[in-house]
Amino acid sequence: MAKLYIVPTPVGNLEDMTFRAIRVLKEADLILCEDTRTSAGLLKHFDITTRTASHHKFNEHENCQYYAQQIVAGQNIALISDAGTPAISDPGFMLVRECVKLGVEVECLPGATAFVPALVDSGFGCESFLFAGFLPQKKGRMKKLTYLASLDITVILYESPYRVVKLLEEIKKYFGEDRRISISREISKVYEETLRGTPDELIAAFAAKPPKGEFVVIVDKAGNQSESDDE
Image (cartoon, rainbow, N blue to C red; front, side):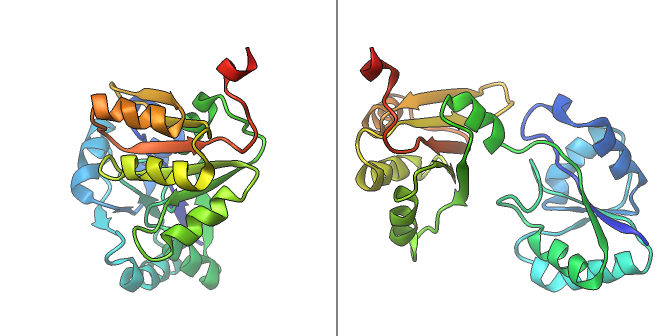
């Protein structure tokens, strides 16, 4: 039987693409892309000429059953997102679920995702953590923040440059003004940067230099002292 291949793509530097990912994309009968225009540059760079189709959050509800049936009929389909691993804060979960329901084999290749390097770069404990992705923009946001603040583990969030200062203000309110935070942006890109500090310190940094790029926000677990406090 054919398979659904979940293929991670680089979050920044194209050298992060794996040999296996390139081979699978070349051999697949169809590549489903979050945005075919965004993926076109990546595919051209690696001389991948496989046929593509759009599969994104606005059409995945209606398309997932169709593509799962195509795999049952014998087509090997690869799924990619604009960057990183599909289904991690990106489309893909519904198609995987439909394939599992139909008994279709799903093979997820290991590869790039933004939060792992950001977590390691933070210097915070990595032995246990919770990846919460993007918080709800309105309904349920306060409830989610209250829950996350109650946990005794490192918390990982995604945020846009337009709302990252608001998120820092909320972290100060719900997690505490002394909670340590590490913020990474543009992972694996030319302007990759990691800032560390308390909510107020990071808010001040963004007041001096407005935030740009997509952010991974790492919130240290409660009770950990900053290096300056330990001296």
